Image 1 (tube, rainbow, N blue to C red):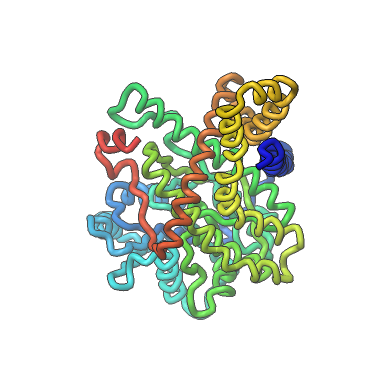
Image 2: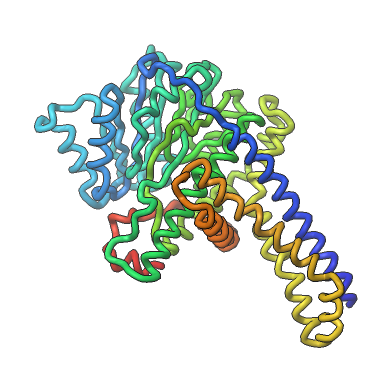
Length: 456
């Protein structure tokens, strides 16, 4: 076996993948850094309906409903209970009752087994059908907008006016809008913890905030150029007429674990435009626990793999440009590329270690004669696409943080990203085993603090 030749080939392949990814990062950073705020619109031109899917959300649903009804006084709130075993229904019924003025804008949709607990998409479809029945056949579905909010979600007070802007729902061709997502507990340590557990929990939350507000926001803004802005599970706004156009008797949300991206695929291939804005946001709680974080991202990764069934639909769509179709296909390839990366990236180091163990002097000579430069470039291109997000996050989101701290954020983010290689393998294993069920991620408030700490 010609080890130097094989080593050079694997290094070149890995370096090519890294350079391609670095180029992609540079392309998405530019629109993000150049973004300027747009003028808001008049929210009273539209009718707003918040959908809040719940399963055992007694700990948070009361505060969420009070927030939504207090902040958006003219909006309807539809709580979808997915056969909770706790007192979620009781909390909502209490808020609906006479003691609270008999709130006619608060609705409760109850699902029961065996039809319940079949995924978030199925729960949203139940609320969609309930809303259609409540509105009647002659309702103005172009004017009605559905807002999906998690049970711990807090949409910003200006979100309706921002989403009513001329370039968003003010444009009748726009079928859906996704808003920026922020972590409400950034900078807040996990309760009753100290030492490394406290620091780890703070770092986990910060990385999730950096990911959503910088990397994901930049990707979404760049998709505005390709016409492929995707939907997220929290802070997802969709025109009712757009949902009607893709329901086809089954409901607009389908069976993938990544039901938000799946919805976007159907909307885009049906000819609707989608929008994204960082002028407003929805707050949600980040996870302190690495164990729960890995479970959540495994579900997301598996959902992306499941959406591979739409490759032909994307490729054949006349509503997507060639660049737009390529962008969506690139996204769907991500978990598979991560699987490939875990096989390719370690090979140069394994081969080098084997050669050093058998002939150390020749390896040392080869290394000092210039091979060290190749490894330096290899490492730089492997780290820079991730480290760069620390200073970018500081500039756009946290200007009060010091530059050195932002570099530290970037280095931590590089480590954080490697968890996706783990979750891609876990997702692939679940797919191979036929395990396609949806599992709720437990909230921070649902766990005793000692359990949160031990989950690290």
